[in-house]
Length: 103
Length: 103
Image 1: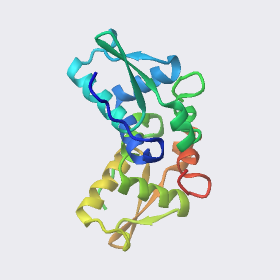
Image 2: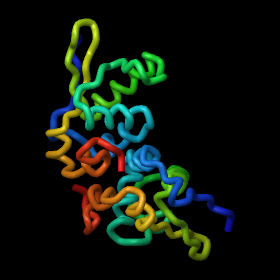
Image 3: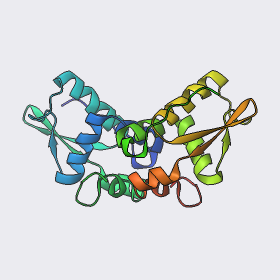
Image 4: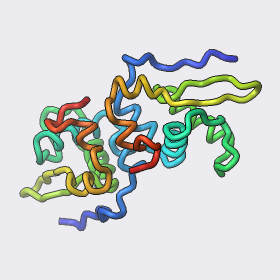
């Protein structure tokens, strides 16, 4: 697996995090992670080209929102919730609720 | 004054609002409005070209974050806080705090 860079907790930047969240597809991916934990890198039910999804995941990772776990040839993504909660208290809960539903 | 379109409260879209906030200059403009109320369309202390600022204000307005008030030849911008609080409870407070400071 290639090295997958991601920013350290202390380097998370709020405008960059908001930019990453400011797209309907990325917002939905984060909502799913906030709600259900891990998400496959290519969910079957999202009508988005794989290359586009890959770009969305890159933006989320580079903004510090996600951590990547290899699973065979695929990857599973999850939210860096502890880091996000530590840096921006209440943000994930405000956006997605404790149950992961949008406000 | 030209007609300045802005979305109705019920049409505010969370990913679009987050996209508007997801830029350092726009984030700072919103922080100032959240903190101090009205902001001149061309603040003296921001080292940003006027045309760039104008574009930032347009993005904020079209996402439903701001309302525009003409003041002579200039414009003053303020946050649509009631609309934002109604549609996305806690978001402005979470991002900027009650005193308008970033978290």
